[in-house]
Length: 278
Image 1 (cartoon, one colour):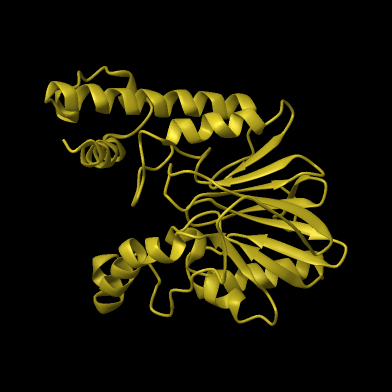
Image 2 (tube, one colour):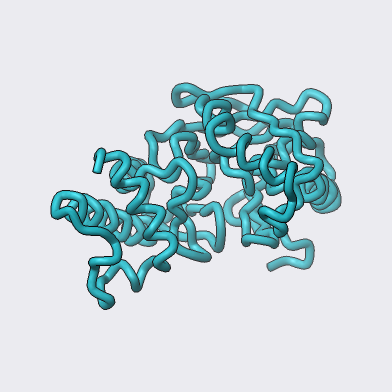
C-alpha cells in the first residue's frame, strides 16, 4: 500500500480499503475530474473519503456510483449528494430496497442505538441515488468512459457492475468478496447468484482486474472459484428443501462448513427456503 493508502489497480483507477469492514472505495481518475465508487457507512466516514481524495488527487469529484444498496456502501451518500453538481448513480431498485430493508433497520437503530451499538448512524439520512440505472449504460465522467451494468438478483437485487473499459478493471461490489466469504445478507438470492457470476465471466477476460466490495483485487479464476462455492450452496439448499431437511441436518464435515460460517449459511438457507416456498 502506498503512504496515502490508495493503490493503483489499473491505469488511473485507485482502491483504498477502509476500516471498519475492509470496505473498498474506488476512485477513477479522469483529466477533468474523479468518480468515487461507494460511500461507506455514515456521513463522517464519507467526509473522510472526501478529505482523502482531495489530499491524494487534488481534482474535483464529478460523480459517485453505488455498487449496491447495503449500508456500508451507501450510508455516506448524503455527503456526496450535498456537493455541487455531483450525480449519484445506482441500480434502479435501490429506493425499493431501502424502503424494505435499510430504512426500517436505520429507524430502529436511531430510535434505540443499543440495538446495534457498533453502528454510528445518528446523523444518517437515507439518500438513494439520484440517477437510477435500468439498463446497461456507457457514460463519460471526468473524461473517462465507464460502463454501468445492472445485474440480475444475486448478492442483492440492486447489484451494479462497473467496468472501466480502457484498462479492463471491474468494480463488482459484494457480488465478489475477498477478505471473507460472500455475505448472504438482506435481500440475497442464493439460486440466481451463481448465474449472475456466470454471466459476468462471459465478459471478463483473462488478465482483467476485479475489485471486490471487501478485500484485495482478484482475477478471473477467483471469480470462477467463488461461483462454484455459491453453486454448492444453492444445490444444497434445493436438496434440503426437497428432502424436508435443514442446515442442522447436514453432517459436521459437509463442504459448506469449510467455506462459510454457520451463521451465514443460516441466512442463506432461510432466504433460499423462502424463495422455494419451503
